[in-house]
Length: 83
Image 1: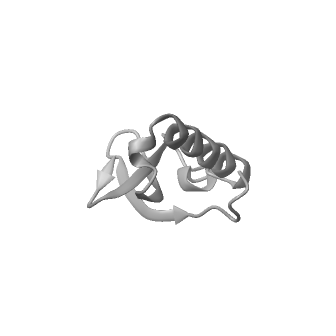
Image 2 (image 1 turned 90 degrees about the horizontal axis):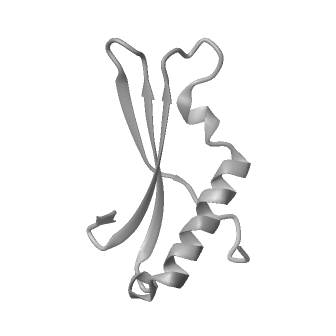
């Protein structure tokens, strides 16, 4: 998704119940690395996006009957550039 010229990758996580873990907590370090690598592959194959700034968001949805939605912009960043 492009948001004011920023190429945004969004991970959506859903949990009907938060008895064990909240949906946002499931986007841990290893999942973040997979998302970052996938974004790098996307940009490598779609060079028109190479000059765009990238951002990684997380949308957390929790609850079954009356779900609450939390959108965390810039939820995480790559630790280094050697993907």
